[in-house]
Length: 168
Image (cartoon, rainbow, N blue to C red):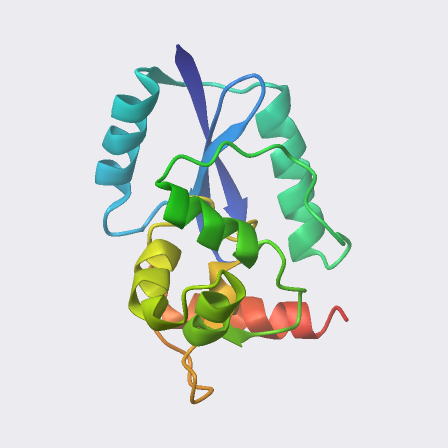
């Protein structure tokens, strides 16, 4: 399998998109500290090669990302391919249910998936998300209301939360 990779510019920096003709596999800021290892893991799990290029799915996502940053997108429609454990996928699917402009805690997510005592595992699954912005891991905060870790940086997390709060 061949996956295509393209980089787009956003208000928060450059983002890399990796997709095939049907799905988005990865959407991350290019300065992510473990981006290379994420890409290697993706290649391993998909048994694919990644080449620079574009396809219709990347073009669709680029358009939706631009609309998002311009405050004109209600919901992403691009199809996603989620590669992870069953638990990670349950967490990521729950993250997709968080409305824009709303933040929740790791404990809230653990309760929603029926794993109250697994809030640390929820945090780890959140950190393993490879599709930034669309799967809104930036909407998850500490139970005390404080911002907490975000692989792409707390400043970006705060910007995304503020941006979405202004859209509702």
